[in-house]
Image (cartoon, rainbow, N blue to C red; front, side, top):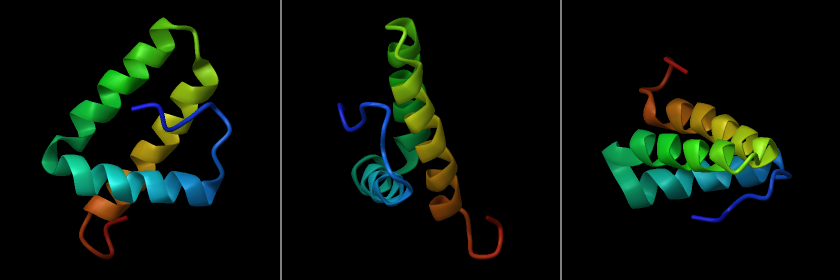
Length: 68
């Protein structure tokens, strides 16, 4: 899933987080971990950081209200 090039805005990250949850549901964490590993293996730290930032937003969206 090539949604980032290491320069996503905060709004783009929130949109990506929502889309990932919509598409992958409960497996979203595994999807993110795999993507971060691939990017780090390629040496693409900027894109990996985007995905890590997205993972924080996914967690906030996935958590019940008040837990984020």
